[in-house]
Length: 354
Image (cartoon, rainbow, N blue to C red; front, top):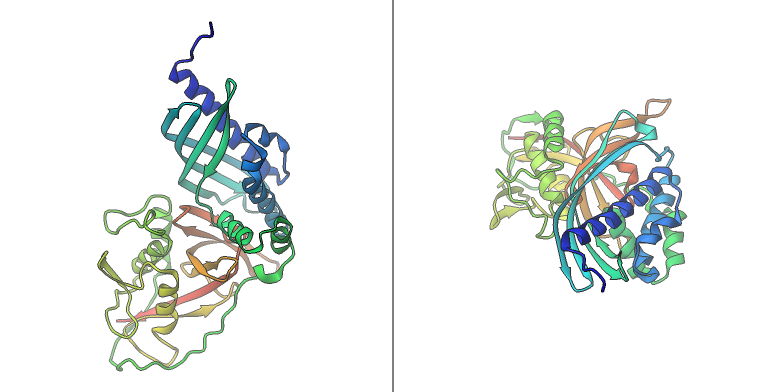
């Protein structure tokens, strides 16, 4: 008669599979070479199609950058929050922390903390295999949007590898004159250092003592960026027609929405107006700096994600910045900007009237 395994022994087997799955994935991204042994931990090839496509396109996207995106060094840890067995199915919730040094920026660490994974494993015979691994990732979302749009894997690959639509999105600031009532406000320069310090401090763990965390309510990325701007000195702005503030869930304006924040930042003032609140304008990759804002669009052109620049990490021979580290929420962490798929728009934060 076969001997039944106690739950602890099953947990050990489940963790073994998950940890080998993570080891294989990190090795692939570390070398930028796909290795089929990662498929040994998957329940079926059909279940793995999207994840395999994501990994392969992540490799292609990094290879086409002008930098060496192989890992110089990396570490990661998995924090298990729940393992539940139901017949031949296992449900796992864990949080991933990882620390990566890329070859092209060996002195800077790209950090992710508290990345939530919801993993389902199926048992086949005496062994466990991963059926799904659900987690938040900007590039993964971008690829899934492309799949929904094209319904064809080859077209998605072509779009990622060859299409110029992934180029940065440049906007000219038209510096229009707006019709706020003119008042004698004093002008202050934005404290980019204070904004960056706040961003680094709270990039991984939200500041829930002062603000609400919207991670499970549609996303926390723009809420986090607004907090950083506020830490950099921007005053809450209750003066119509362009307002920006957060006092509570029911008393807020243009604080948590990607396009809402953009509209406020670039429209509140022009070069010739002196309205209460921020003076900012649309910019480009070559002219933004620390503490400035970058936003991402998906494959449909919908602007969905906000980030803040916290470090210059690569300069060319003519002293032009080639890449930046950005801090973000909703996939909390600090990442090289060039690793992000999708069009980008840049917002230069200059100062504010108060």
